[in-house]
Length: 113
Image 1 (cartoon, rainbow, N blue to C red):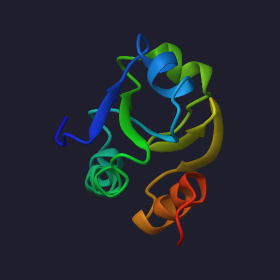
Image 2 (image 1 turned 60 degrees about the vertical axis):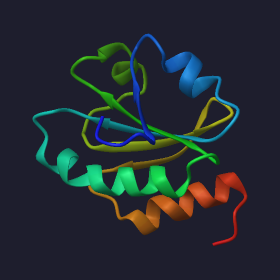
Image 3 (image 1 turned 60 degrees about the horizontal axis):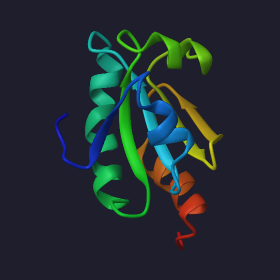
């Protein structure tokens, strides 16, 4: 991973790191070959830095982790999902602005916009 604040989620750790997390979790579903996914990476890294200690942020490679991708019906990438209490609270498909992602996360961490 390019940033120390961005975790790597996998089929093996998704349950513990995302579903059972005590804090909101942003998951960026992506693939190495996906150019829009690569374009979203700096945004994900910036959000991870901004919410360090308040939320967990990570990426899940849909090619390497097909179980989680299939169970969450990921049909297009990039897809960003924000989980809280083990449930999907917000979903963005395609390139999404930092402002949109930040606004959604702030609502879940209880921060003021």
